[in-house]
Image 1 (cartoon, protein in one colour):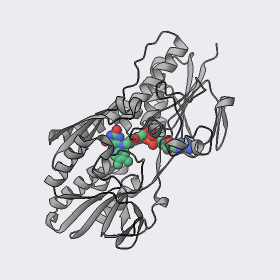
Image 2 (image 1 turned 45 degrees about the vertical axis):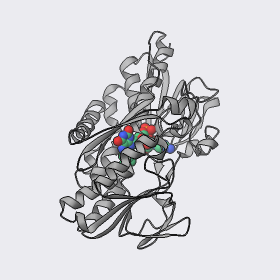
Image 3 (image 1 turned 60 degrees about the vertical axis):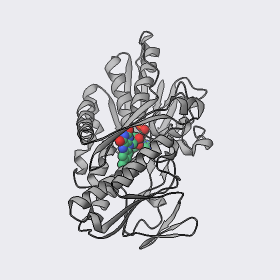
Image 4 (image 1 turned 30 degrees about the vertical axis):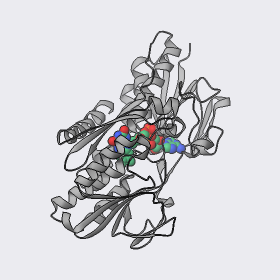
Length: 385
Ligand SMILES: Cc1cc2nc3c(=O)[nH]c(=O)nc-3n(C[C@H](O)[C@H](O)[C@H](O)COP(=O)(O)OP(=O)(O)OC[C@H]3O[C@@H](n4cnc5c(N)ncnc54)[C@H](O)[C@@H]3O)c2cc1C
């Protein structure tokens, strides 16, 4: 029998874990596995915050996807233009490819072109270039106001704007300017981490009070002007440096197709239990591209667990004997807060199935959690590449 053709779209954590697990369990006679990514690089995004603070350079945290070829995975650097589930094929900039199984892991894109005024003293660690711009703006900064301004939901890693605020405050304290710099998080939520429930909000508030970081809630950013933010309600908030979380967009091949879920900001529609595209047994979605349809935040940890689950389903289908576990609906996000580290652990089972608050606990803050974060970055890049 000819090997089954498996296409994995996207080389973020979701795509890399799915393709690698498939390649580990299936022989080349059983399956031909291809991963397609328009950039050809895998990026460990949590460390973009360390690019901002100068602790990492871009090449420290990204790896060429071509390295996956050593596992027998075919790597194509190409842009997916459209997905045609009814024809079992996709169209890229250069080709038309057929598949027996399709895994969509195209993520979400932080889009600075949707942040009006980005050309002023505004930067974002949500991209590598943006993190380098933050580093430049922070160079020699001694006095004034820094805001971390989230622009719209959904965005990658809900706690990360708070983490960015802690890290910047810590950086300036280490440089001896802590007392002369105000750091505030501007958010559309009314309290920090609002969708994660009152316990999580209280825990974040406690840390923010302890380290002198302000919170300006219920505030939607309309545009960055040269020295102030204009909000949707017409307020002006002064800043010297703004660290933005820009609006995120769904991947083009999803947004302009029947795969798009209008109730989930245009991200991919999905069956919540099987992670399959409704109506198609051989098309799966994982990671950021399905997070809004599941009603959870965008996080690499979810992409990872979902990738393992989907790979086990495909292996089971091909081999007929492989038992995978249902995907893990919980996740942990470790934060470097400068002074200490902390971990947010949430079980989203209730959130996904009943639309209720997730069960969350905040672990930390201890300096040891910072070490956990450093160790995880090393583990991740060494394990998959
Ligand atoms: C500052 C920051 C801190 C973070 N911290 C954490 C953390 O502590 N813990 C955590 O769990 N998560 C964290 N995250 C979130 C995490 O990085 C994302 O949720 C994760 O990367 C999502 O993985 P994914 O595989 O679904 O998508 P992505 O990582 O977005 O990958 C999608 C891939 O698809 C490719 N692609 C897109 N469109 C196309 C196309 N048309 N054709 C071909 N290729 C395409 C892209 O090039 C990309 O490589 C953080 C993110 C940021 C920005």
